[in-house]
Image (cartoon, rainbow, N blue to C red):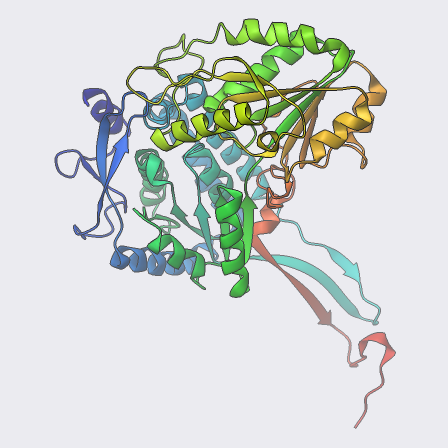
Length: 509
């Protein structure tokens, strides 16, 4: 408890009363909200308690966000970018402490916790540049002495619902781009990582307060689903960006569509790496290893399947077994640790269930697959020799289980890869140009991300992130993703003394 108290205090957070921390940044004096336990998945011990939001808190947050959006949209976009730049500087100052908090509450190893903060810094830097590039188009009118152009306006209030596995980075992808686009952002984080969200909110809001800027970043922490459902249904929320399971994402999409709102969905993944007969194993093996065990296999971009050419299958299996036997499992803050715990007991139960299905469906567990007898939610990552027609192989298993499937032809490998419901991330390891280009062509990978000679996990913010099919079709970061947070308006200006109609229509009275 001493370590977590020191970490929170170094992040500028205040203990409200005996280990209870506010989830609503002090805008509300409500003390009737339910208490939410923040649990360290490495020990099972309670780090702190968070005061969850009440319906009154929620209404207060939404009203404040609507008012802030009205003020913020009047601030010139480059000035909005300057505010985000200042937030990036604050994040740099707090990177070590914030990365440690991610490790404590989420279970990621320290390098990944720090990496998540670096993602926030990177997207902030990216957003600063984008603030000066919110371009519209000018086009020629078919009518004389008319001018046409397109411009972009803020949507208003953006809702962000994030998951535990990326407790802070996913918010920043949406929040920083949404902010330079002129919107206010309301965040509903995962209650499993409440402390991380409170810390980030505090850091960024300090910048807004220091420079007398509108309170565009608002947050509520829901202990159940009642307020979250109200949030999804709220017509004041122009866009709901949801990161989570496909099952829940379908419900979010339907509810938002019923009120004709906009949604941005980042859902599940069942990502494959194809390893062909020319692949360089010095590249492939470490990429597969990180993809399979990074964040203990709890990434939407985690490597679930390896499709290996039959002529190389035995060698790859041998190398992966040797690599997996060297994985150091333990305290995520220990610099020697390579894999931390699963997030909670339910995740451990799903790990067991998946491996039971493997056995029932004829798969062979080559290594790992046990739950470690120690405090916390630690498991041994498993390698499974499998066939593509096993139902469990087509299921997103949010745990460190890697399926090895052999293939004979590239066409067969691509077909197997694309046969799952998801379409997020994919990769091929090859030294043949023809294979790489075939994989990247329209007849190749059907995923939103397709890589050559690197793994499925670890996207950069310079490229759009997201996928197809049951992954939801959303895109965050990169390219022109700012357009998702704005509405397009077409303007036609008649500077003549006549009133000609389009399409040559004659209308006279």
